Image (cartoon, one colour):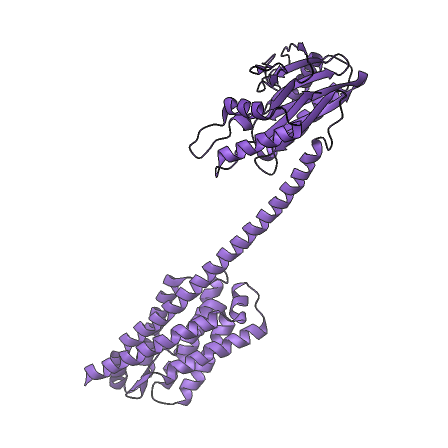
Amino acid sequence: MAFSIIGDMFLVLLQMICVIMVAAYLITRTASFTRVLDGLVTWKSQATLILLFGALSIYGTESGITILGATANVRDLGPMVGGLACGPVVGLGAGLIGAAYRFSLGGFTAVPCATATILAGLVGGAIFLAAGRKFIGMHGAVLFAVGMEVFHMGITLLLCRPFDEALEVVEDVAFPMIIANATGVFLFALIIGNLITERQTKAERDSYLSELERKKAELRIAHDIQMSFLPERLPEVPGFELAALSLPAKEVGGDFYDAIPLPGNRTAFVIADVSGKGVPAALFMALSRTVLRANALVPRSAREAVSEANMLIAEDAKSGMFVTLFYAVVDPATKMFTYVNAGHNPPLLFRSGGGGPAELKGTGIILGVMPEADYREETLYLESGDLILFYTDGITEAINPGEEQFGERRLIETVTDCRHLPPAEIIGRIRDAVTEFSGEEPQFDDLTLMVLRVA
């Protein structure tokens, strides 16, 4: 007979657990509950939660199984969870509702049962406050539920008479009630914990996306500012054709080119590559370009302009960054081409008479390393049909999925096949050749080109 009663009791309590799972999900998804999690406690939200957890307490009483006038149930579950998750007001309110309903049913255990239900909510709320107005988590909640039900059994033995009947009731219902209430609290704690984690993850994701959008907006502004440093229109140089292109690997980059009109109808041509990528390189690029342009506009030789720029850049280059640079001055009247190559990729000179290109090799070290570095200048004379290709290493070091570099040989072959075209079209052919070669491989370095041809 006792075995049959216990079996029925576990079956009923199992059914209650299934209902509790649904109730836990629905209650924790209400606006009132989520507001409490956010710390936005209002009387309206507390009243709503008191009613919800109070109703759960009444359900816990009604769905129990009665033995000798006492009911094995999960009545304390609603007040316990209400107190642990929402504070003492909700816990006490739900406890009073559950206790009042239980007391109205009568029975010789009515007083200890009603008392235990009120205390379940009140103590749960006190734990909530002690934890800094936060849910204590799964392990603490389950331990509290076990301790609360042990206390429930204890005051039943203390207050109920005759003692023998009270002891018989406690012996029959203690274990299943402790297990059922602890399981119910576990399910609530699991769902609440998942909800808190979900909300934290969402908040972190939203914060990350917001920060990402802010940085993207800043990079777009930086990109626009940097692009404004490049010539909006290249100057017309009598007797020459000119085109240029710069494609940063990121929103901003360290490559730059320039064409600077000088006194005496001369023009200075510049192509440069700052070490590094991204925003630091872009800032250093802005510094380098400004310093170089300012020095170029002062009447002086190419060597003096680069030397002075190097001294100023080196004095400010505290980050360890440097610049490779090719600087040339063209006199349209004489077709004289004077240049300084400060550690930059040698531009390629294609003579009109055919044959392989000549490299305009280095005449000094990179800018920004040694303030007193010495530079020399070289001079050559151009003829009609001659073509000079200025480029940065992002062209020749572009790689394909097989990690093979585009290389200088492919660059020379590309230019040789189309050197009869206008400079802008030559640049387009080089860009397309690099893009086709790289395939799906992302661009990892800035690509900058400038083509100068004698008409």
